[in-house]
Length: 195
Image 1: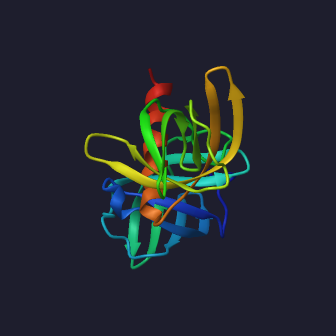
Image 2: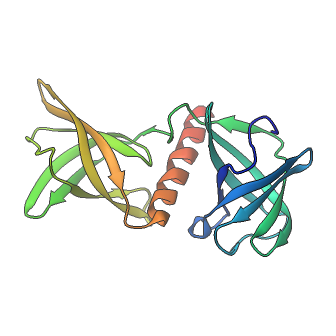
């Protein structure tokens, strides 16, 4: 683990209740684990309770489970994880996501069929002509209880025989929405890999 993380590296910590997700900076790395200084108080983080960790490295998004050995205010000593995994070389994990949804921009409304999503953006098909200069509102259902509202900005459009395929990026009104999508995509990726 020492060769994968380093001082001043940013890291995301997600306890069992992902609403208490937090970010921090790694301040020390040693043979037993590492120390992080969190941006916010560690609400929902208990000593010896496992949390998920995500950080970007030169090899891609690094994911592992570990626990706090010590909690001293916003400073946490984290145990070395038993194993780790690179989710993929992209900045965010992309997963297959097939849904018929509606996107809106003011009075404009479009019917779309999503193909895949990540916390960074999505790809979808539509039979309708899109204005790629606009920003669109879209709600992504992740489960029966959880949906995430995003602002979508088109980046690329391809014409094909059935209509158009578009891809673009998300903007968020708050970080919780982004963290919810990161966690959803990471878990789906692991479920698919373990099938």
